[in-house]
Image 1 (cartoon, rainbow, N blue to C red):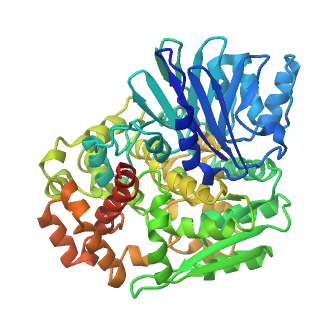
Image 2 (cartoon, rainbow, N blue to C red):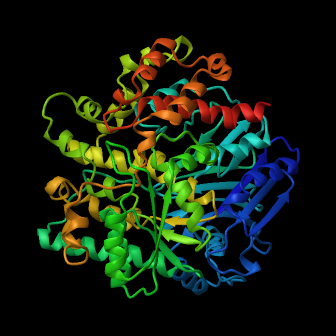
Image 3 (tube, rainbow, N blue to C red):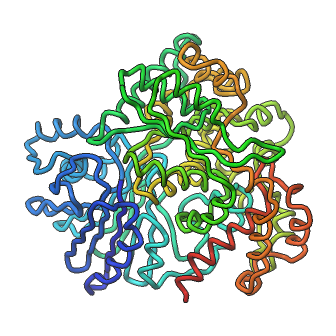
Length: 595
């Protein structure tokens, strides 16, 4: 895990090395173990390293192979790097390091753009081929690792976060009205290539971008998930056995491919608890597990310790619980927002931030349960969508997922930000795609390939890497996802969803953990907004910066402020928190840079 950045000029001028240093400064928390830079005339790279594999200086980056004329900056982990290394050695390549980064260099030289299809892992990287004058950027299949870019005239910059690009300067920080519509409709999801800032874009998951010496570019998808692919003919028992085997393998390789210990973020829900059980099944001993909890409200418990304790006790893990009082949550909220690459509405973003701080003091790598709900149909709105028989695919999806319909969005924003129903057009197009299969297959495909990328996956990366903690997500192993993609929807959604995981967990986990309502890292104070939290949001939305920005209509704000607990989205987000969060994010990132 690391932070990467770089600049490529196409007008013959040298790259701005001061800008590289500013970007590296913004990325230092992602990689506290080493910082390095590289320049080759119009090209410059910067890198911040978190040492996980091959802890020696030989794997420090930027990684340069002078003999091949190649340089690399890489963020992520390649789980099959040892297999690829042996294959490349068989082709005559010699290695000077023992890590996974150098495998990418040699793989590019051997296979060109086809190298990314051979990588099994999570990654974002930039590779400079000096012989061809080519800059090659690539991102993993599910966007687990971030890759942003900006372009000003004859210069392109890239980085692991928008904040690094802002630090470099010259970025158009005007709000993208299409992205704003997505933000307030899709629970803060802004699909690639857009971000909330007009001058910052991101590479789509499962894509690569090739820039030649003259600035010509080619962008291409190297992987996709078709919901209409022919299903293997399997019995229910065979499906459960296949899923168990694939998940066991995904968990095992994410434990073994590291030169440091690997723990688990244990929420007490089925997904993270199952990771603990499978690691124990694989023979991992002395496992470290970590849980976080918050204060209760009358409507909702703030911790799930009673469930995580059951799992920790059963498997005799070295378990640590962290209870965070509300006054600390309020005081640390600005820090968590500082760690957000883009605005994030999910209340568990703050929970992950505070948990990661504590965990990073004990360990460098953890496994996390993100992705299980999307891959195996675990959210409460899936059965409702499936049962809905009237309306188009868009109407069936929107009824149970959109945070706001277009009419409410127009009541929320002022005239400069009003426009067409951009989100409906995007979602309709993706749900109606020719290879989308039936409706629920299309929904799950949309969730896995689009919605998850810019919501839970992004939160986990940002909040753990803010503390130099690597989070691995075995439920998003692409081989497991491809397998689950063929599993019948009715099997996934049985018993309220995630039936295959519940079935394989029987006997491995206490029934109380399997049969409980869906769990997550709860933070009731950001769902039921009262007291100091309400005052904070009221002050932010009444601030001079917010008024001068002029995004929100006052009538809509007054309606939310009058009864903040009565205005929740269809998937139970607090609408007032959404508005306050965006404004806080803009003040702390965009306004701060402008000053």
